[in-house]
Length: 176
Image 1: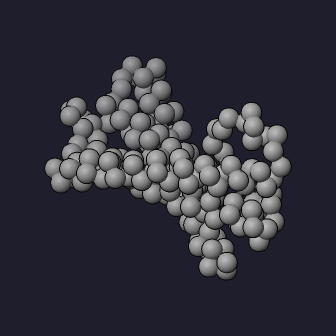
Image 2: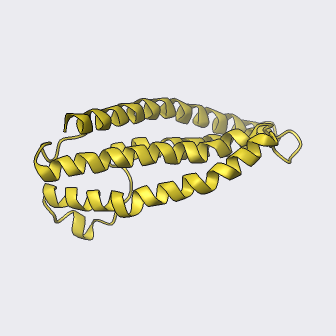
């Protein structure tokens, strides 16, 4: 069981660090949007590059930050039954949710987006708009990368839940 704890701890640490990095990108997005708004309303001009950068950063934040959000239990869930259960009951729901939905869903997205990303990378796809971002394949690469981080965090959640069910890990402990 120490191996399970070690793997889970490694995944949690990885997504914690990734999440902290994504937080800085979020600050960058705020600055880009601020500059875009200033340019539009004060100077009556706008740039395709800036607008595309906004949605590229937005996509990066949500894709790469999904594992971090799961680590801190920040994803939306339907709490009709979940909130009324005890901590061990919640561990069962998390365990089966990870096994039946999260892992298969992530694997499906990773496997289908991989070819899409590699095709984009092979042609060095860029924006079709003049003045747009030349490296569109980078944001497309965030799709399998983000879902891989989410998959890893799902495995960690499943391991934590399994250990809670067995009584090896105290229920209610936040993953480290």
